[in-house]
Image (cartoon, rainbow, N blue to C red; front, side, top):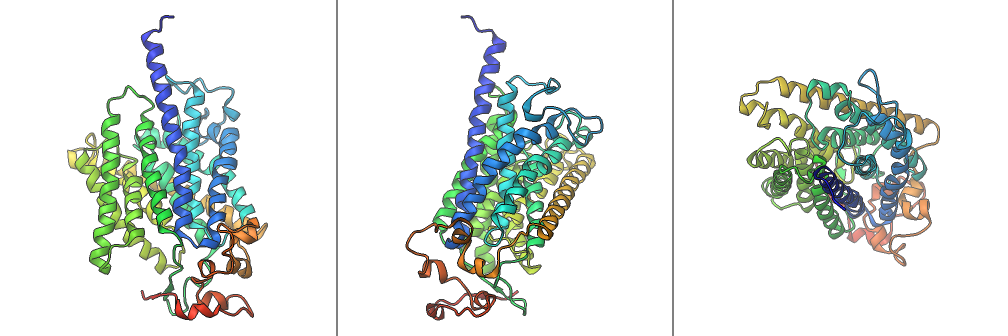
Length: 447
């Protein structure tokens, strides 16, 4: 059978997008390992369950409602109203690939946005209300922001906003949603003291976190180059190079900056620095020179370290650094397009118009994300409740929410309990600290 040039091109693009969709979906495994590694063992199964919920409940929500809100026809540039269940009027989406290939690629992005929030609320949020939030995040919050920027009639897209793969739509939206969630939920018991000091509640498995980081980095080669929607677009090579260089620069900055500031290279900041570089380059990966990608990623690594400390000072307890990585650096990366874009950026003689549009765009989607998440969490707090009890928090969410520990036979061992501070123990009336805590004190860090 003869295959025309058009059909061949469509076939190549379809395979390319499906492959990249699989890479982006694999990032859920990266989120699961990273977040589980960064928190305490007694809550590690619960956080993996939350990421799994993003990939199940969230996926169905995006299929039923989210895709229509994001890409359906509208009359005001605000909200799509056709294409529910990926059916009906979607002819306005001009593609060289099947609509189902496009949907599954975009669905993987929706899962990533929701999984940014899961890490920030780790170790104290109930599982049932998290299911509600995931459905709303994938079905409404992310699609609304996506429609404004990527929708056929989106008002920010019409203004000329450039967000190639989602520094604003995915990362800033996820990061500032996480901040709103954390503010309503409150910090973990024993995290902060009345005198302003902070208790370290240490990660239980940094090797697992590193594995998650590498999986996320790997998946980003689907996230960014895949957003070209074409395996025949020769710019995908530069997109991949820019993605990789920004991650390397962010990780390097995280290592060197913590060595300079604290005297030792901090592994968590090295990982989050690389992820910050990836979040930042996602908007401009198709529009900037590799040297600019290094600058954007390197700055992101420094911003991440500074932001983690800043959020701790305002007692926004984020166990995995999601707000600093995605909120701060999704914002930075979006704005950086107005500075570094080879066509329209300030450094290339483009004036301030693109920069202004980028700033307006990321501010708009960030306000949408923060406000909507704050309202949802506040409503759930007053109705179904969002936080486990102090006793449940002390025992761990793996047991209290799911009835099974992540590591069998270790529930009463130091692996589960050594990181509990005296302040944490005091939050539970009548509970005594384990005797072995005396030789394993929680480190206090001054402001």
